[in-house]
Length: 355
Image (cartoon, rainbow, N blue to C red; front, side, top):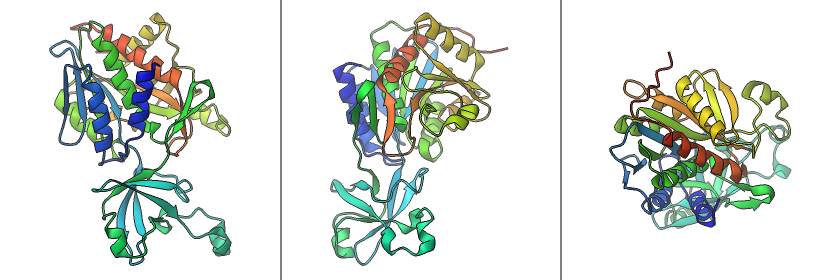
C-alpha cells in the first residue's frame, strides 16, 4: 500500500459516522473519488456512487458500507449528564470508561462514558456486566443548561480511538468494520480507472448497514446492477479462544488473503469467477461457507429488483465491534487487486446463470 492510500485510509477511519450520521465519511470518500472518477454522486440517504467507465457492460456494483456502531444522545439530565442509546450492536462490556467524540452542530465535543465504580457497587452488581441503560456520558458540564450549549438530544457519538500501526503490517482502530471495506471498494475503482474495463463500475460507499443494510437496499435498486460484490469484514479465528468458532465459521487468519464466501446467498458462477481470477493472478484467498443469509450488504443486493448475481468477499478482522479492531494491510491490498482484476475479466453478455 502506497503512502497516499494509507493516508486516505487513516482519514476515512477518522470520520465520526455512525449509522444514519455518515456525513464525515461521505465527505472523505467523495473527495478522494473525485480525483479519478468519471462521475461521483451522493443520494438522499448518503450512499456515494463512484462511476468508472459509464456506458460499459456488464454493470457491476462494488459495495462497502462506511457507517459504524456508535451511540445517540437521548436525554440531558438536570446535572448535565448525557444518557444514551446504542446505534448498532454493542457488546455491553466494551463502552464503559471509554472516551467518546460527539458530533454536534458546533463541532466535536469530547466526553467520557461513566459508570458506578466497582468499589461502591452492590455485591450482585459486581458479578454482572453493567447494562448500557446504566451508563451515561460526562462532558464536564455542571447543569443541563451548560450541557445544552454544547450538545443536543439526537447528537451521535463514537468511541474516540484512532488508527495505530502495529508490527507486521497490522493496523488497529475502531470502525475497520467496515471502513476497511469502503476503502477497498474505492481502491479497486482507482485501479480500474487506470485499466480498460469493459464493465461499467459502480463503487458504492453504503450507509446504515449496521442497522439493517438500508443503504445497500436503496442504492442497488437505483443502480440496477447485473453483478454485485459486497465487501465487508469477517471474523479472524487466529487468536486465542476461537478454536470452537473455527468449526462453525471456518479457519480465517490475518495476512492470508481476502475471504471469499461460498453458500446460499452467493451466485456459484460469480464465486467460481473470483476463485479463478485469484488463482490466475496469484492472489492468496481463503474460503468460508455461509449456509444462510450473510447479514451483510450482499443480502439485499442479491434480491434487488429481479435478482443480481452476487458475491461476498471479506477482510479478516480481529476483535469485531470493539475500539481495537485489527486488520492486515496485505489483505486490504490483495482484495482491492482481486476486485479490479475480477471486474476487468468480465465480458459483455457474460452469463451468470449457474445452471
